[in-house]
Amino acid sequence: MPPPTLLLGATYVPDQEAHMADTCTHLDQIRVLSVNQPGCQECLASGGTWMHLRLCVECGQVGCCDNSPNQHATHHFQATGHPIMRSYEPGEDWWWCYVDELGFELKDVEPARASG
Image 1: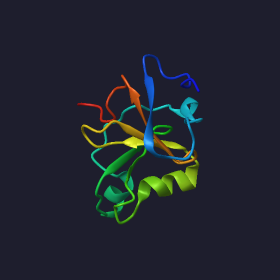
Image 2: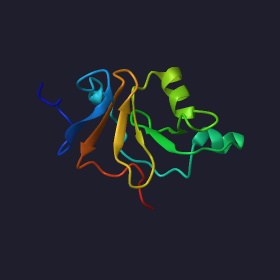
Image 3: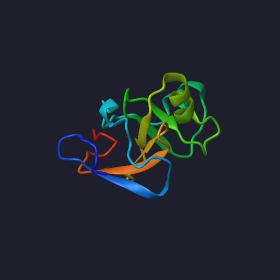
């Protein structure tokens, strides 16, 4: 199956280790590639803590991972239906589609954390 149409210059690389679908069918919903946030927005507002951060690429919400006490990234998906998030950790470039249960990478895409 050919890769889906992507952002200009991006290359789709599926994660072959653990997924249910062959390709992510929600790439057309990517609106935000990077933001500049200091941490999980909900944890910062409530005084919570987090382990790792995730970026919703539909609206730009930064939430904490499922290993964090509050799991705000997954709760954000459940509340909004926004299907794709990407790691917001420095040096990580993997993405996850909740709906397709698919991990993947998009090559040649700017880092999730905007500098400055």
